[in-house]
Length: 102
Image 1: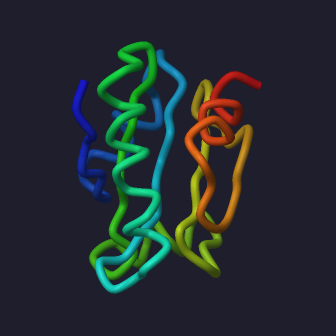
Image 2: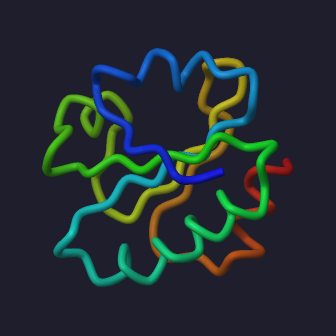
Image 3: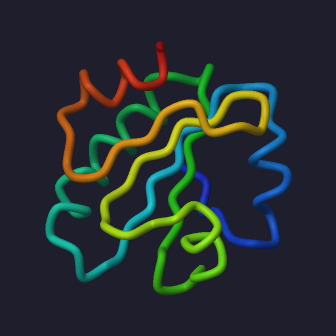
């Protein structure tokens, strides 16, 4: 499955997904975000059991504010519409997958 570009218009359908959701809050100018982005893409391709989305904080300030994004990259895992895990900063792929599996 490919990565979904998440915005305020499609966020409700993402939040209410039956699958665990991984959200990557990023910005194009952010160096660590560019390191995490291909890992998030790989996770989306290799794990169809997850819904993976990216949220550009510059384009979606309301969503960034709703999630309390203070620093990026920030990864958020949601299950059943609720945030169950969150991390800030670049992480290796095994740590990102572990966040989803907890």
